[in-house]
Length: 116
Length: 111
Image: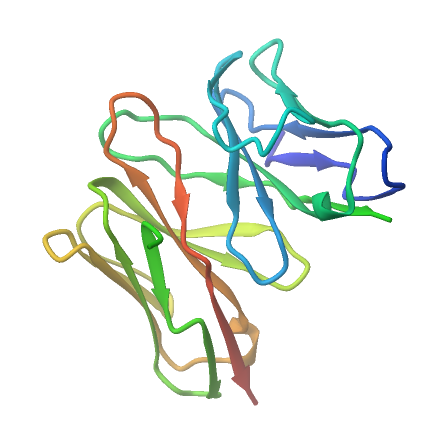
């Protein structure tokens, strides 16, 4: 597609429920990032994929959070047993790494998750 | 201490004023990014810098690698420039290019 697409754009769920957030990156981008942004804060790193594998998942806050990218394109962020503190904007970004010189990163519009 | 620090955190200015937002970082980098986030909106990449200076319209970004410092300038500011401006860096690493973000500067331009 033309840009990074995230669905749903808004999700309200009850505490304890399971949620999936989807990210469709720009075609050909091998790097995919998930970030979480709380009100008034900058984005907080969650997980980074290079191709199909999670190159760095050190930002996932606990084992209720999991992300997959089985075919190296679309990624799904999965949150089990949601808590009110999980409420945030979940941002996905993709890039085509050019080692040593940095790369332009493209963001989706975000998925606004509210846990009530 | 955060690896990427921005100042000011909040800035309110009158339309037409020259705006400067600063970013300091503490790690070696391969690139620095300036991003713009409108209220309720996604994030747009404004600049990616590894040295020197870049200009796009009324926006200018500079970086001093030795001092680990970058500035974003907005000339002839306009209310539509009101947004959160985020500085982010790609650390110099053989392992990956995970980006580290600053907390953002909230800019409000008054008409």
